[in-house]
Length: 244
Length: 244
Image (cartoon, rainbow over all chains, first blue to last red; front, side, top):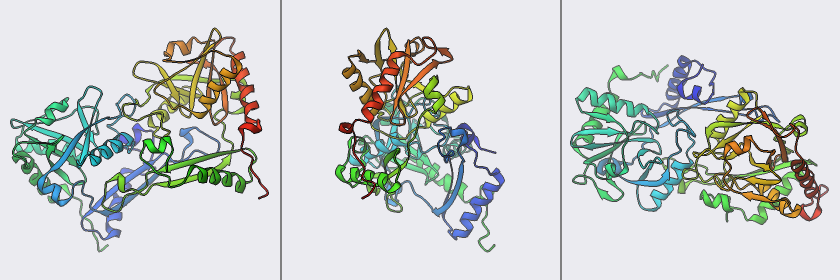
C-alpha cells in the first residue's frame, strides 16, 4: 500500500497508512518530546547485486521524531525573512513531478547557497517562464490589495499550503492559485511562506527591497495567529499518550 | 581541494587527488578483485543540529571497489541493447548542471522504469527541444553514413564518452558533437552507448525499430574492439600491486 507521493515514484513503504500513523505516534511517545517534528521517508533501496532494475529494489521505510524544526529562527519569525529570487530554475514537472514529495533538491540547495552567500535568509526558485514556484522546504504566498496569491503549478502542494488555503476560506480572505510572476512577488504588499517547519512565516524583503512598511503585514500576522490557534485545536490534533 | 564536479556542487572531499588515487588503488588491492569497478562519492553531509545552512554541512568522502559492473549483460553485449526514447525529459542544465557528475536521477529512474515495463532494456532521455541527451549511466552516439554524432549539451561529459571521441580521432572516424534530434537516433545506421560500466555497448533497436541489419554495426564493433585494446594498454592503465 502506498500514498500519493510514494505511488508516483513507484515506491511501496510496505506499511498501511494506519500502521504508519501508529509508528509516527510511537516515535513521538518514545522520544518524550512535547514539541516534536515527525518525518517519514521511503527510499528506493537496492536491487539484488548485478541488477540495475529499479523494480527489483527493496524499498525501505524510515520514521523519526526530533525536536520541532523551525525553518526560521526567532528573530526571523519576529522581523520577517529576507528572500532572494534565485536564478536557479526549479526542476520542471516534465522532469520530476514536484507535487510528489521528494528531496531531489540540488536545484534548491544551489539556490539556497547562492542566497546565503549574498546575505539573504533563503531563496525562492522560478520556472522557465520566470514565475515563482517554491523554495527549499516551503510554499510561497503574496498579498496584493488584500488578496492572497500562491502558485498553482510547478511546486509541492504542501500540507501547510493547504492549511493556509483553508484558513483563508475560513477567515473570508480572498485567495487565488495562479502563476505568480517574480515581479509581482517583489512588488507585493506582503509576502509569507508556509512550511511544516514553522507554519506561516513572514517575509519582509524580497531581493533586498522592503515590502510595505518593512514589518510583517496584517494579513500575514492574522494567518500566523490562526495557524497556531488551529495547531492547538484538539479537533485538528492527535493526542500522544506519553504514559503508555 | 576538489575536482570539477565537487567544486561545481561546492563540495570538498577533503582529500588531494593524489590521495584519492591511492585510496582507489587500495580499494582494488584489498578487494583482491582482478576485474573491479571502483567508485568515489562525495556527499553534502549534515550541518550542525538546527542549522539549515548547507555551507555548515560536513562533506563526506567514500570509495569502494566491487566486481566489474556491466551496464549490459552478455546477451545484450552480443546482440545489442533495445533502447526506448523516454517521454521523461532530462533535468535541464538551468536546474542542475549535468556536466557535473551527480546521482540526482529521479528523471532517469522513472524513464528507466517506463522502458523496462515496455520490454526495452533501457531508456534515453530528451531535452525540452526533443533532442536526445543521455540515459541512466551512459552517453549516446549514432552513426549516419559513416559519421558519428553525439550530443554536445545537456548531458554528462562522461570519461568514456571522451575515450570514444579520442578513439574516433585515432581511428580517423569523423565525429560531430551537436544537438541530436530523437528522429535522427531512430533512423540511424548504428547506435551505441558509452559507460564506465562496459565501455562501448551496441544498440540494435530504438523504440522497437531495428537499426541497419539489426546486428551491431561495423563502426560500433570497431570501437568496442578499440576500447578493450586501449583498456589493456599499459600506457593507459595503473598497475595494482596485489602482493603489497
